[in-house]
Image (cartoon, rainbow, N blue to C red; front, side, top):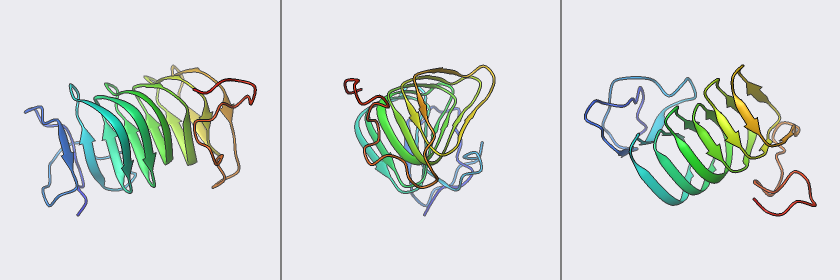
Length: 155
């Protein structure tokens, strides 16, 4: 069962995942139910794969693959290649981001890497240090995170 209306508590819980527990607080941003949460102060390294919405406010390094939505909060710092349906960034991302539906960069976002998605939304103040490839809907490249310029080295 997914967790709806999932937010950070004052007790500083680090990681919560899909269970029958419910927490009050901020919603997942209108993208469906939040099923996992890596809170501020937490660090995680490896491969993260999920089917529902996940929010990261801590540090994650490795690779992220999703069939739904990844939300990177203002305190989130991602050092990874990201492939998802939707990616919403308010924090820092170091690595290439590929989304089959859309990428949203809020005003506090800093992305050092390339973006690929049919829809890219950038608020004034967001920082992007990389390239943008606007693919047709549902047709992001077969190799997410591959350099936009084929003569470049890997990310």
